[in-house]
Length: 138
Image (cartoon, rainbow, N blue to C red; front, side):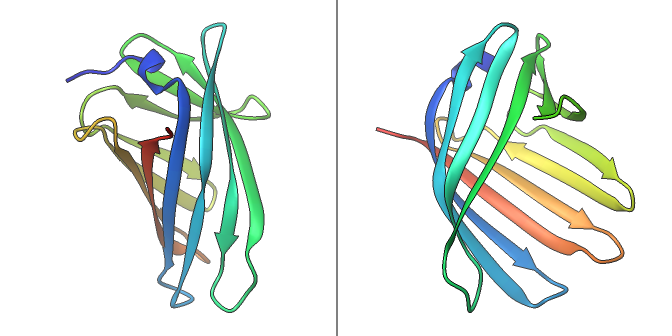
């Protein structure tokens, strides 16, 4: 089933695992994303606690702008630079090149309202997979 960008509006619990193959470690993030309507799309803001192996948890946050482009979403960084575009089908894929690193993502919307974003990042100093699971906040 194809979604619309407005389906993402609201609060989402996030559980994220970051598996760093190069360092041989795993980090865990637990928090919330809030997607708020704005003209032409949504503002995405997430906050939570990031726990790195052997360290105390730290507060982590990030934000993006999701622009409604019909059957696709254009994602921009906070500074307005383009990040990536994804379709609103069940399992869209997208990519982002940030020299010298390649970022590839697969979204999974087939179990809606639970959805996943799995990023694979490769580069001279990077080799990690980051899986984020989103579920509606109650």
